Figure (cartoon, rainbow, N blue to C red):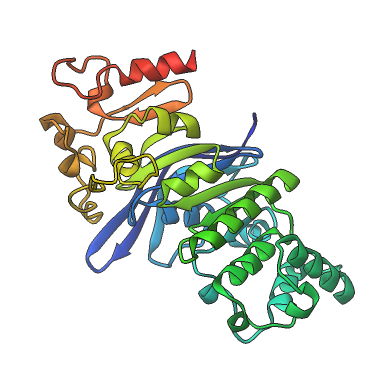
Length: 343
C-alpha cells in the first residue's frame, strides 16, 4: 500500500526562557493511503507537537531542527507559507481537541464551514456553499441540519460542536485528516458515536487519518496501526492486533495494564506507571522511560537503544536486542514471538 505521508528523523524544539524544550527528538513513521494510524502516549510525549509540525502550525518560538515531512512526495518543511496555506484545509485537515476554542463564537457555524470551502474554491456561489454545508451537516448527523446552519457554537452541545469540526475538516475532502484527541472531553456514548462517524467517513472517502489520543481503548476501537510515543520518541509501532496481543516495550505494557477491563479481577487494583515524564529541556541521554521502567538496566540510562523489528512491529528496548542476556530478562522471547506471528 502506498504511503501518503512519510515523516523521517523529525526534531522539533521550542526556544523558551528556561532553555530549549526538545519536544520531538527524531521521529520517523509513515501513513498509508486509506488507513487510520493511532498515536498514543501520555501528555508531553510529543504527539500533538508532531501533528502541528506536519501542518506547520507552530508557535513563533518553535523550530523544526531536522527531518523531512513528505506528503504525496513533497517535503512540507521546504514549502513556502503561501504553499502551505493552500495545503491546509484542502489536502490536509485537522480536528482540534477543544471545538469551543476552535470555533468563532460570533459567527454561525454554517458560515464558518462554508468559509473553509470558499477559501479553496472561490468559484463556488453562495447557494452552492450553503447546499454543500447542509450536506456535510447531514453527513455528520447533526439533527435539524438546515435549521442549525444559523446556530452559534454556544447553542451546541460538546458532541455537536465536535461534529461541526468534523464537517469543517471534511469540507474539501482532504487526503489526510489529523484528529487531535477529538473525544477527550466527551462522555462515552458521544465518544462512541464520534468514533463510528470517523470510521464511516474514512470508508466512504478513503481518507487517511492520524488519530492522536492517550486512550488505548479508543485506539482499539478505531485504528489499523498504532505508534506509541514517550519523551519525544517512538517507543513502539505495530499493527493494532499485535500491540494488544504481544506488546514489546515496557511502556506499552504499562499503558495496557492500566486499562480497566470487564474480564479483569475486580478485587485487584488498577496498575499505574510510577513517576513522571522527563523534563524535555534536559532530556535523558538513554531511554527516556528508563527512570520509570521496572526492568531498567544501567545501559538504559546511559544510551538510547536502536530499534528491533519483526515485520511491521518495531520497538526500542535494550532487553529486546539479540545479544541481551536471557537470564532474568522479562522480555526474552517476546521478539521471537512477534517474528513468528509475522511468518
